[in-house]
Image 1 (cartoon, helix red, strand yellow):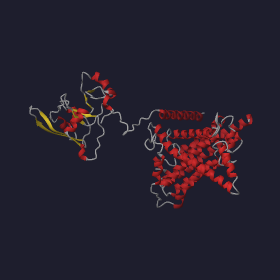
Image 2 (tube, helix red, strand yellow):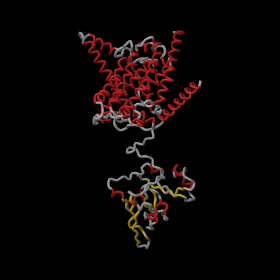
Image 3 (cartoon, chains in turn yellow, red):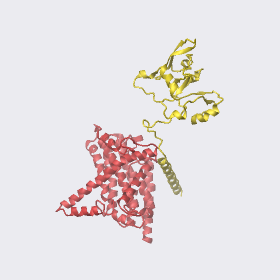
Image 4 (cartoon, each protein chain N blue to C red):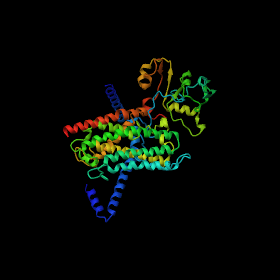
Length: 193
Length: 335
């Protein structure tokens, strides 16, 4: 009798297994035909840092060097200068993408909210020199392309209101995390580059 | 139907010994065209089906839509590869093995009835012929494994032989029930005997045994012990490359088609259908079984060699014998 019972159990589990695979067979494929089809990039995607500007298009960066100090891999090099209005500004702000870990520590360190993490993911170049992003490039990316600003342990009044807009990623994060601004979220994510 | 009869009349009108020769040649060409045509299709289909089971899309770019021309670059790639014969191989065995394996793979189709009157040759010992040829494959596998002069190849070949003993006996015995009910070994007679009801309904036990043993005969996962890339690299195929390897591949797909054809013929009424019986029914059933074997392949992990032996000798064989006894009793009571 034990043999019959074992046989029955084995047969049942095999049919069950076949059921699982055939369900997968009839489910839509998850493949993204990448070069033809753009992948959906989460608005919380953390790429490389970009320089943010204020409403007037002026860079928020004051060349305080906090990000350069926070960077664990020395990917950021800044040359500071004093402007005519006696305010400090970065004359050069270079990011070495060959080194950048996309770790977000520069964004965390920035006291002026002058940095964001780009949602670009196609950073391949055919020449190592292309890995150095200069001030103009980063400022332009910060002005025109979507980026994310997610910092840990930051309590925001508008966190609840911002959460639904900031897509699913924010909801599943730990309680201490909060979402700052995620500019150009759902509307721009398709064309993120 | 009229095409076949007019062709028969035309060939029959040829003088002397030309008539059987030409008729045989035409059949050979047609069978080869059928086998290789379907095979080209299967290379692509396997990749698509595999992809869908893993929720991928499979090949998409060569031949739009759905990459239906993918088989052509696949074949060209294999043709362009270097032909390597290992220094320590037994040259004759090594070179002959891939040629030998093609023989049973293609010769199986001789007795398959594709439709009413569409059978290359209706042997009155059709079933026996199928079983005998099916086990012939093992000769080539062992030649390849032994001839390669490689321990993994030899291990794979030995597994293949051990497995053959395990599944071939239940496979043959599962078909005995079919022969008993049909009262004939000819596949055409077997199909005609299913005009009232398909044998899958009369021989459910035999069908299940056949299905498992046939999956083993195909040497595909979950019974790909002889290849077993994770344990034996590629078993008997380790040393083969390019076109020589491709011949094993082709033979494997040819047996997939053949086994599916046997299943459709012996248990699912061949070309018979609930309406409009014809070769299209045979083809539909054939592809149903091909899909089923692919489905099985992408569902179950590889079985262990001792479990395989146990399955064959301690389970399938008694069940196949029980099926014969039950069939005998059934025939005595209601036959």
